[in-house]
Image (cartoon, rainbow, N blue to C red; front, side, top):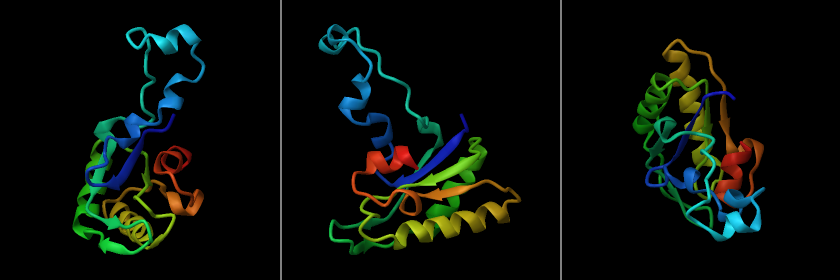
Length: 141
């Protein structure tokens, strides 16, 4: 598939690779589910080398507690392009309650990509799947 980069909240860069327990056992026989030593986890859709965290926090009520650090977004976009990203997905915590921060990140990313002379798509999860549960939103987008 396409080599996708991910921008998420700083400190949550490995959330995508953890996924949900149910997802890691789909399609496996009961014996394979019971014996953790023989269970093989699927590779994450996006490898850690193409995931960047930016400072931002929105609380469960949708209030922005820590605004997006815009310079961090610019650095993240540059690093993702250098890592070979052919598209960028944005998924921030609680964005389904308040889309403002994700859309700010999206707009900065689009400007930075253009400034760097590239033309790749940017997908904000709130534009495609504005639902709770970040792992679902991340995978769907």
